[in-house]
Image (cartoon, rainbow, N blue to C red; front, side):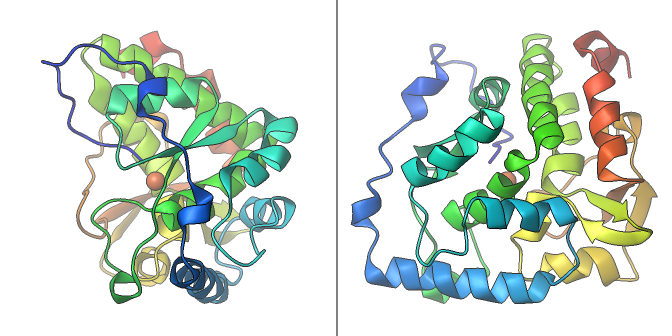
Length: 256
Ligand SMILES: [Fe+2]
């Protein structure tokens, strides 16, 4: 999760200050039932429309196990594999905190889940978006390295007063990117993989723009927070995007 607004008139805080206990035992039977409903519905909806690394991660992390995953159980598999771990947060965290977390291979996941009446509408990303959408890809070794690098780029960009550059790069790859795989258009980003409405829309709507991904184009392409995207950037392949982002230095990001 990423929050656009940076509040600068508050004392600097460490990312650890935003972490709360997940309190998994406080999730109700209804919460777990909502997770199961969302999970089954989304797996069915995605089918083969997502890069194969995504379902590799779902399987590896045993995310199909019924109920809201507990952070510790997830980390017991994820951390030995790629060094990433999840921590619970109560809601969106400021950009500088988010990127600082990524740079240490820490991913914040909401400690709440949407209600049944709000299956498709979210004011803030919940644990279904965060855990189903984001965490599977963090089990992929090269993607895991890229996500850490995006965190370092983000911290550097914010320090230079150019945070939007890293936010756009993140948005058009990790969150709302598309990618080709074996010639077919697939979902790459977590915001699409976890969205009931936008998953198909991003691939099939005939009125949106789909432009080839490059880090330069990503940095200069604005995005929407509160609506489906009017344009998506399409990677030639997951591997190419990872390689291109990993090659990007903070200095090069600022010069794009
Ligand atoms: Fe997200």
